[in-house]
Image (cartoon, rainbow, N blue to C red; front, side):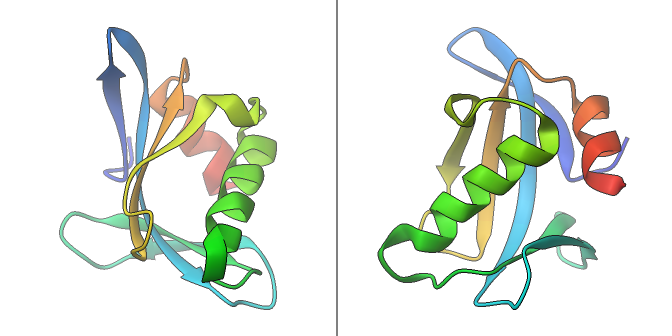
Length: 103
């Protein structure tokens, strides 16, 4: 399993924690591969401005559509104003997230 996707639990509910490095202001929203950091993060470019939460809203929409889950299952746990974000996907196995985001 990729190091940027880990099994995680929030208030007794299991899911997947995604460690992301987000680049807002891109021409296209897409997964760009791994970002060399410690810990390793998955790099995602976002075609939205970082102002007023636009990039965060588009990130949630993109992950929801790519992973095939409702937006209500995608939560930014930390990094709201940072490029390094920890995002929790409720009720999703880490391997499922890895397969969907690696395609």
